[in-house]
Length: 180
Image (cartoon, rainbow, N blue to C red; front, side):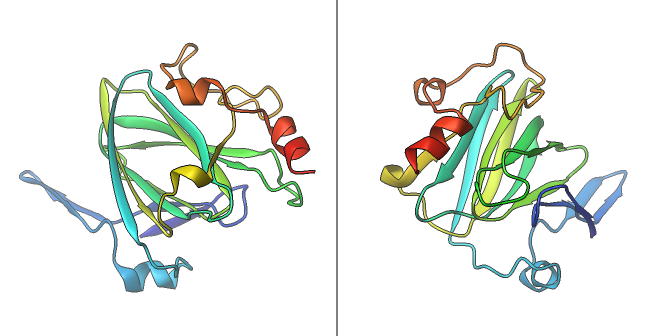
């Protein structure tokens, strides 16, 4: 597989080998030894799968005290996937990485624990799958508003469809002030 480092420490774009012919393709989406070789050594404890329509934006989410590392991919459709550095002590605080993940490019994104994560669906429908290094705890969930002007993510959808929860998330500045 091909590994592409990003501008955020530890956030990696992974391009697995795809074996295809006229009948279709085969891809190994996870193999513990290969992923250990590239530095992803945490055990995965939970797999998630969501389906969303065009224009749905989910995020930007994180767990406050039990952060999750996530290995994300799209098995159907396409999304614009984003990781944001929310650690005020980090030299890349407030910066983001955005990448298109699709069933055509087979890319994966590794997002280590401690980043906010979200995605926006850019195809008619998308099946989004991800492995987590810790369990989801609703009472521990945190978030960052999708359109924070300081982060300035160029989302491909001007008026996304959001959950009620995601419309009320704080800005990065509000997050920092709440933890000061």
